[in-house]
Length: 559
Ligand SMILES: Cc1cc2nc3c(=O)[nH]c(=O)nc-3n(C[C@H](O)[C@H](O)[C@H](O)COP(=O)(O)OP(=O)(O)OC[C@H]3O[C@@H](n4cnc5c(N)ncnc54)[C@H](O)[C@@H]3O)c2cc1C
Image (cartoon, rainbow, N blue to C red; front, side):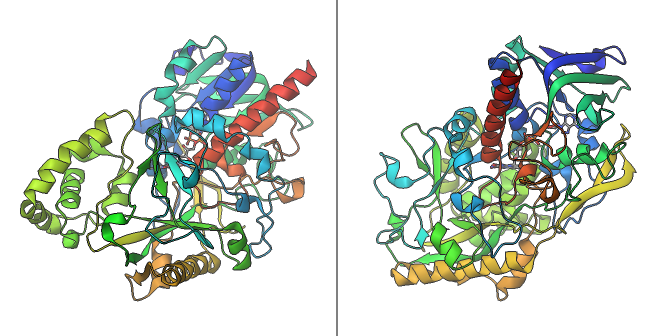
């Protein structure tokens, strides 16, 4: 059942078995899993069924450095489906190395191992609609060419590991009917949870207080409570619930809000292959289920340990569309489409547009027109085909890649950011329209992050040369400065309620339970101890499934 909270009487109280705060991928999966097991779920969503700028504004931070972090309005979405309404849809799990003890990366110790989560990958794939839980090219039967270019074997560097793409699956749209038709789920939308209230003894959550923009206050009382508001908003709610818990709920360690991480991504080099250009696998493969797959350059687990590298991958990219120097009619057509007022907002989100085009500006507009005119035939045949695949087909082409006759491709890196207690979020004194204190975001990158990216490029270059397949060409005179310049995130929010065995070392325990409270849980990448090379959402959903199983078990045991 869907209920617009603005239509409720002020001071209404809902009771249920389980409350879930946030209806993004994590909250929706949890709600469906628990409802299917027979439990009553109240799902509280700050946003509505569609986008509203006034509600989105509730999540805006008070302070952040735009050099290192995107505005919350670009990197989160407050509506049914959460940020999956604007995401890219790239799906891949964390790697075993992300859970390894790595003495060369301080504070990277998870209290649980990879095997605790690997069993949930296929169920996660099912929710994402991204096919089989298979992330190695050798196990994909219909793909004949297993190496990225002929003669390049898997060694300390691998080119056989894969990432998969979902539709991209908008969880609000895809699971709309399941949520609406469930007799067990009450979705309260346009309702923002503003405070977690605990018992006299402070060992139990007693209720959630929530508000609407129209001025209603609603209460939700349940046996168990799960926070699934996305990493930063989940932590914000814990920090803001500080009436009886100085520094916020779950902050015995003083670590609530700390170890905020994302990924380092960017380009400092191009790969020049010396193999036949037509044999280079760039862009996407498709598996027998037509799921889009992409290969990357990664490292073996052993090599990462030996060389003391953070986890990092890179893939063959396209030149940024915005720079007309590429002289490519297809890329210039894409640039012109993505720069056209009105059309640009329809085609993609602000964040994705910025990532694809790089530079945007009036001065270079005509240079793009000239590129298109020079190879008009190519542009005119490409646009309808790509347009259909990207915007009309149910399973969308994830991105635009173009063949390089010179056999040269930008190498786009995506790296782990090492855990750093000084990289953090905290509450400001600035309040949103509901009276909730807004966040100050202070994400900090470290020299170890930058060195990891530089070192990885040296090993990729060496590997290509050792196998006589090519080499890297740096596109900047100062790669180190360039990695620093490109360091910045906000789209993949990791950490701030880190998992730990003992309350003194973190915020949640091994079962995502907030330390010190026996009925409060977190379903979010905020619990992650490391950021890995992988985007977070696939692993978020795997953890949500694990938490759903845990909740079913402990509720059954009680009965
Ligand atoms: C442009 C872009 C591209 C991305 N691409 C990828 C990608 O390709 N692959 C990938 O893995 N990840 C990607 N991500 C990240 C991905 O979108 C997130 O990791 C994912 O959506 C997180 O899911 P979640 O359920 O934890 O949180 P969210 O999706 O953020 O959902 C949280 C929900 O909780 C609600 N909420 C928050 N606070 C409250 C409150 N106090 N009360 C009630 N409700 C609340 C919000 O309104 C929201 O609906 C991308 C993100 C962006 C912005």
